[in-house]
Length: 262
Figure (cartoon, rainbow, N blue to C red):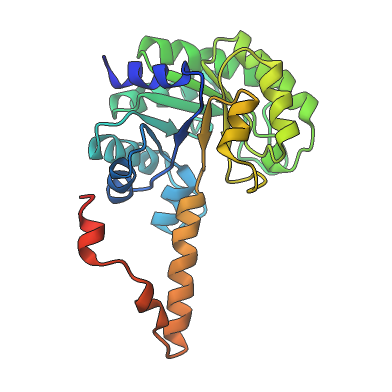
């Protein structure tokens, strides 16, 4: 069984699985050591590492390879919009991610253009069709994403319409980052027949995995939340040090505790 087969099988279980997002080999190995069954890259996490608002195409693909080689776990690759508007050009990034070791890939309908942040409906669907063709040729799992909600376009009806069209185009998994409430999540899950990924990095944090299972969610990710959490701890410690205090040292784990995962 390939890692892509393992990844696909996780989506077919009756209960949701957790898909955490490391940003380098070290965090990937820690998550594997904690018992997670699969991993996902985070393009924002990569951008945080390189110190820019957005990572490059090459940096994202290099990160996919780094994380795929760090553990034997299946890895889903966050490819943003494929770094191209044209469906065929965007799909080429899927082929490269598969070559880098990805078991799954995601493609989104966010243009990266602030003036027109979402691809026109027809083009968005054409892009998913091209992505499906590339993913099937490489036998990897394709997740199609609608980015309306996290971009501030508060249109759940259009989000569902797009996800339904992406499903019809052949996507294996559907994903709408920015769903905040359990009611919104239920509306999406009940409107489609394919597995739905919910990212808790944007959601009501009081929602539990048990509740997500109860409404039929099949996959739960966290986006760049762990990266942001790590950076917050870093900044808090640095500010304390700048103020001449070192209380944070008392909260540090032993080096041996960290290295056991490596």
